[in-house]
Image 1 (cartoon, rainbow, N blue to C red):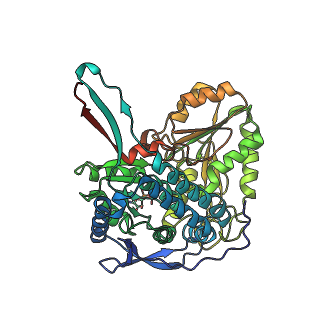
Image 2 (cartoon, protein in one colour):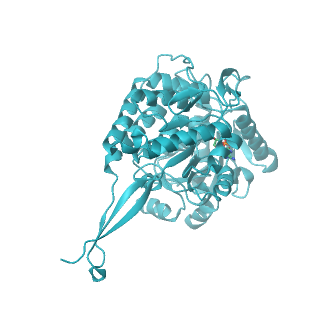
Image 3 (cartoon, rainbow, N blue to C red):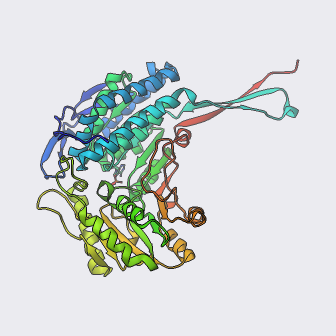
Length: 495
Ligand code: ADP
């Protein structure tokens, strides 16, 4: 782990759109303010792209895909470009971590030790995949004749990629890595709250040598730039990470052009502590499960199911840990919890805290209020006395707010754990391997963690059941979403 000697907020060098290998202003000339969530101050004015800019980016991505050097480049060379980008990210790790902290409000120690290494690993991993994506030879029925049948894996084409603000560079890497490894061209629409890191990585990608038009970045708002990307007739696929309500709009808007869609959406993940668990480990896991990244994690363990017989003792331990958590300046290397990403998000979290206290009438055992008097900080908040019907147990809050739900038997636990529209992740803490497997089998979620939480690896598939998504990112699985399979039949004739 790198313990940062204090890293300063970096200079912001890229604020424009990246289209066809060039930095440019929006056609409209419009800009929007990028805000530091730890202070509320404006960091920079960012070019605000809309439909006209998206159209330019799509044209450049189409040209690069069909006729540019990229279209003729060997898979290995594509992989080498991704590896070069990974190297450049390593060389600029501190600067990129600082941009994430400045833009998102996350602690510098986490940006440096979690985000950036995972970003680099993602580009490396997919750089390695580029020349290992190929088809099969199929033993078709000889009775039909003498055929040689094989499949090819071809890129889908021009991919629109719309990402959120919680792990800006990682979400970008999860999308650029596989798309580029497969030979697609991309147009990235960063979240309006956090464009800075993506723009810097865009510059590094140009330095790595990606040809013009292969990577494009159009900053702007969802309802304008994002919407234009989704509706554009010459975009073949949309990969989206964000709220399910946005995914529903995207799905409807993508229907007329029948785009390929993959979604990574929200969650209300059950984190289950059995009485036989190592309670110290489980309490740490409950903390990591909900408070990591200010609770702005799609797979946050926001419903903490605790076996009745240990409920009070466990809540005591958990509360003590939550109250020890160090909040404050995200650039302070000691800080464990930074600011929520925006005023809007801060207001949403505070609204849910109010609902928990006054509408659901749950018990707020710690937190439940703002931290400090500037920026968008929320104290780690624990509600007890929660049942699964309450709004704080049903709605995704996307902040440092956890609902503790007691349980006393396995079947009702499973039924409650699955009684949610979401199905992204889950965890179980127990020393009983049989119980752990039984839960892993029964829970409807894309990831199950046993005696751990928030372990990620770019090689391990990630995604959700139900309203938590379509398809899987990471690992080998995502490559299917960025390729078409072409089946070729050759009549060899009879000899
Ligand atoms: P959040 O509410 O947490 O910001 P969103 O789902 O609204 O989550 O945002 C995730 C990403 O989706 C952002 O880049 C945002 O700009 C984009 N987005 C929002 N609305 C739309 C839309 N109607 N069409 C396309 N993209 C959108």
